[in-house]
Image 1 (cartoon, rainbow, N blue to C red):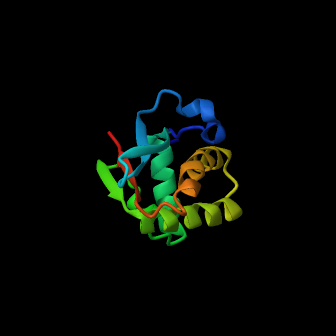
Image 2 (cartoon, helix red, strand yellow):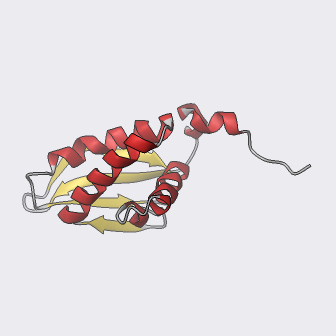
Amino acid sequence: MPKIKAWKNRLKLSSYEDSPLSTLQVIDNKTRELVGDPISIPVPIMYRMYHLGRAYDFQTMKILMPDGNKILDWHNLQQLKTEIENLNEVVIDPVITHYTNQLLVPLSETVSKTSCGLVYVSP
């Protein structure tokens, strides 16, 4: 019988405590100020978000593959915000909900700040 990881722990936040982290930070490019705190998301969760983006054909979420550094502009931030809100309506995953809710806070602050962007660094 093949060895597989237990499914039951994939929906617990504690399962990802020792995982490497991706860091996402919203920055106002005009004033060079940080918008909100940096958000650290475990790499396995970033892959889950990436694959959910592919599954639902969310164009911006598909950019979030944790393979290095990326910078998203204001238009991508607004699209990402919409995609996350739509994802939260259809996917019941407490881990995804936890991290996407953290990400929605700074993204919501960018609606009227058109000079904002997102810097995304992954190991």
